[in-house]
Length: 205
Image 1 (cartoon, helix red, strand yellow):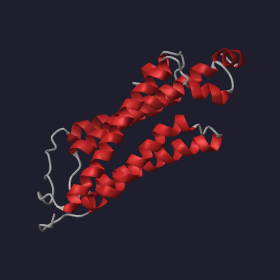
Image 2 (tube, rainbow, N blue to C red):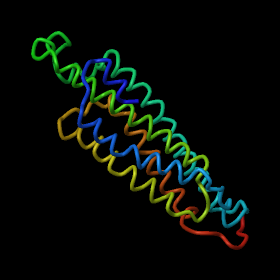
Image 3 (cartoon, rainbow, N blue to C red):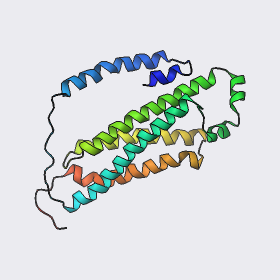
Image 4 (tube, rainbow, N blue to C red):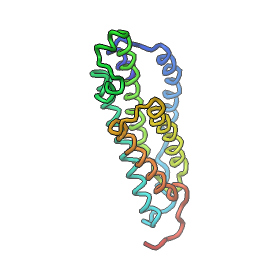
């Protein structure tokens, strides 16, 4: 999808194309070899114990996180293919579009390429996270918790850390990211016990 975004501003990155071309066979093989997989057990226990009730908060956080990334990816993709910038971007630059075009006519297409690519990545990640949160959230499946943890850590660290590194710390611009971090942390905390352990006996409500 990202490649179609890039064509809109006339900048096609051959290196990105090669990178995705190398990943495509693995994606196709994964789809082929997993098409006959059957649904696993629903969990170690069917009781609504205390750990399960806590996990519902964690699962809700990850569902909200996945949906937010999905919507955010769509919005950023549209911005990348149309206006390219949000108002806080131009305030940070202390320049307008005309100034950037005078400086280098290829600069805006390059930024549009980056922004549209970022939007496409968020869209894909949001859809994947939403699917795992809705249909893969099962008791004792610790790999799910580690997937959430390891998958989110570099994204949030790089995404927010880069803004602080370059001094682009506008609160309104970063507010959605802060909101997602809260969902991420709360989701990890409240789902930890449920995804790491199986309740084999009935516990009190």
